[in-house]
Image (cartoon, rainbow, N blue to C red; front, side):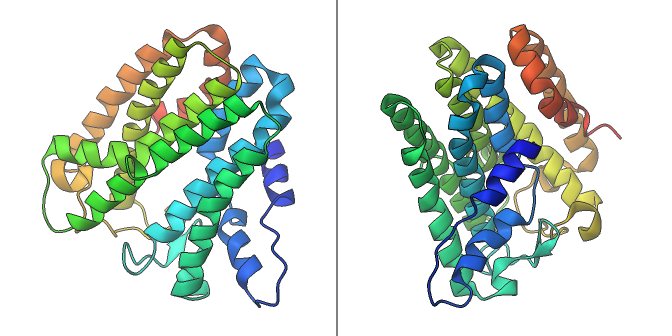
Length: 283
């Protein structure tokens, strides 16, 4: 984690110009912290199977964090969630203005692919990485989830539709992070597919837990705007708090069973990251 954090701070966007806040705005939300969950999933797999490729994988890990951060910046905009707080800091549109926030998100989205293109990895590997990030983060993934989330505010969905929403909005990028790590170290296709499927359900668990946090924690505890899901199709709004916690427990048990079937290298690599989510909903 520290190695990635150091790399991130050394490679924040540098775009000198006479614009007074542009460069600062590009770096602000990246530098504000965060769990770094997606890049750490990718790097843990690389470290387990091909530690010699770790340095070469760092730009790809940073591209994931950039892409995720762009999505948060846009998610917080007045046109979407209209949030004031993210990662314990003022959201970009509050700190600067809405135009700056939109453009910073646009820049981080595009720069994510530039980082992959320039990474010291084989061209065929980089093309596959670009494909995975674009597929899972674009119109067939995260953006679709966000579109459904925004369009159906105040219009209740059924449980399968809510799962579809969150598989796209949240889970696909988590699943892609695992698969991208597997692609860098050339794991066989079957293992890649198992990791992706595991990541989808891990992402769903992540979202249910996030909904529970939104309903039960204040802004100081969570570091972001809470009690902001009242009009949203969240699991807590649909199922209630108790049933959401029961769903999280069932999903966590299934993920634990599947996790135990992974090979030892994979289990050792992912255990510290994944274990906290498999048990976080309890109490």
